[in-house]
Image (tube, rainbow, N blue to C red; front, side):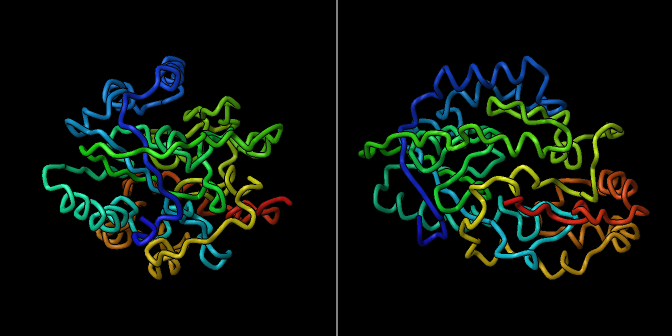
Length: 309
């Protein structure tokens, strides 16, 4: 897995997701904190049973890939860090394909399936379960040495293998509440969940219709990194060694003025091969219209937030 570029990986049994974890999911859904993401409720049964993703699955290989920028020059002031390079869905599938192929060649009777975010797999649950990540107050996970700016992906495998004994890494958050205090919408609930209805990432990327007026959006067009930027675990964490996840030249040359002038053809060209294509042009125009004539805030909302320590 390290040859694939993973900063951490581990094995866990593909047993059904724990009832405790599913109870947390159910409480989140019942409270309405999933906002318009109805697919989360529709797929609740799939989240509970990995075999729904691959019949006969016995083992889950979890892998984490760092995407943290090396410095401010590798960031874009209008886009979340994870979207500044190649689409991670496709990039990680390419990186994991040789490993999945090798497993099937070693065990010809076995089958594999690569899952990257879009499949209903409890990625954070299995990353924690296999001992490569710890849960955080802001609903993310952190990998030791890499922090929380990591992509998670899995290889589901029908072969049974020895699972090394691992202890889950306890949450390192303790009494720290920097993420809660810094979140512009007050979306971080403190129990490891996030209220999407107040989260700038959800609102700028997935929410249709008007944006809530009582949230300070700053100059964010696609996503938000504030809760990660203020997290002490990300101060000094390793930067990504993977070229795909560095700032693309096309996005680096993009500013508010060029986004205002963007048409459907330009949108398709600019975001081809990028995770930012998730937000259609109409949604980007809505986000851009809030800030097109707004000067950058000297206190920092004109760009990615810096750690306050």
